[in-house]
Amino acid sequence: MRARLDKAIFAGLILAVIFTSLAHGAVEPWAVAVFEMMIVALVLMWGVKVVLDKRLLIRVPNTALPLAGLLAFGLIQSLVFRAGDGTRFSISKDVEATRAAALALFFLLVSFVIASNFFTTRRRLRAVALTLTVYGLAMAIFALVQHFTWNGRFYWLRPASAGVTSPFGPFANHNHFAGYMELLMPLPLAMVITRAVNRDARLFHLFAAIMMAVSAVASLSRGGMIGLVAEILFIALMSWKAESRRSNRNARGRALTPPHARAFSGPPLRAVAFLCLIIAAIGAGVYWTGPERVLDRVAQTGIVSEDPKAESFFASRGWIWRDTLAMISANPILGVGLGAYETAYPLYSKDDATNKAGASYSVDRAHNDYLQALADCGVVGGAIVLWFIVSLFRAVASGARSENSLLRAFAIGGGAGLFGLLIHSLFDFNLQLPSNALLFLLLAAIVSVAREREAVSAAMPVEQVSEFAFVTGVSPL
Image (cartoon, rainbow, N blue to C red; front, side):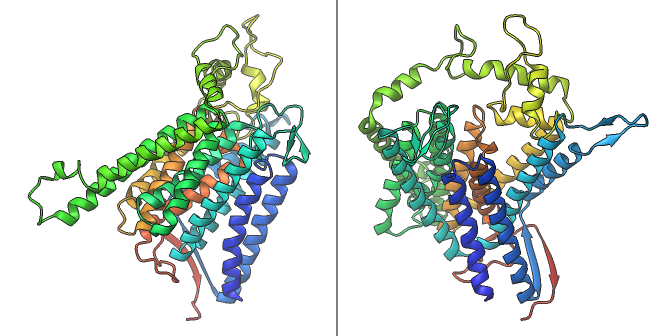
């Protein structure tokens, strides 16, 4: 019974990842409700397992602390105080929106903790890698087929609403599809580079990575294209360093060549040459799907435009960023409230004709996750985000030094996906989409504890997974 519950919780979280993406990113209330019920069910199963085990062990990675800090700050922002004259006030400019955002963050944090505790064996890590690879390939092929046969309906069945202007795959916005592919694509590529899969499976993993990259480019997301380039550079650098370190260690005491000379030969050079072949294969795939649209999309990118709201890379977002900076300047320390950006935006937006605040239009996102974090939570929130990113990539760097090829693959591939989406977040709001945020945190949880998994065996989880753990009860063993 306990073993079945353990497997059910593991499979349930994977199912939640798949569901949220297929449900158009889980942006609609019904999809959010289903996702939250799934997480509640997983927590209840975990509770039953704890009762059967007579032991509670919760492993919490250091990277969970800033997430918990952001949640706590959001709850503080949502508090409503009453002055002596009966006037009510709060930090948030939209208390209900802040509470809804805090609730969504809570369920994402719970998902992060579940992943940190149930993705802790080598067998399960291989299952995760294979599942994400197969699922990413299936989604990439589906998205391309639906794109070329688009009839105005998602899955050829559900009509797209009037506000949907750039759908791709199951997502209503092509940028969000590209962001999802950015998270998935590097992992199978890293599995091949680190030789974490056997020779027979490498061709399949390569094909999956190439198709994911091709579909992301075919979506015409310029932020996605920049993210893919950043990921390939990240993988090249991390692979070079990892292979150089291993080559130097293996050759120490036997080779007469100095270390700096050995770094430019052997496995490191082969890894970089391999990535060049991947880039060529992606280019061939883009050519096959039709390069004209991709080239036209890139050519449209400009710093300025005659129309301040024209569809160009910076001009289409520049007026939003300008108003967001005004919002940040007016609320520099505590922000306007987690999730309250849309409500507060009209107070700080300027009408281009009159140059006065209080424009009639409304914007729900800043199209820059970092600016929105500062607008929502001020300097306090910005510091928490920085804390999370620094903690995350310290774990990535540590995991990339692992002698275990599977852990090294997750550190390099997962780290590349996280890095690519963080670059993409300079221009879009992928991390405010439940599906993309959930997959991001799933990879972050695995990467966060990778450096402590050196002792993972095929069947037993490592005892020291993070810097601290909460343990109660007495083990029945």
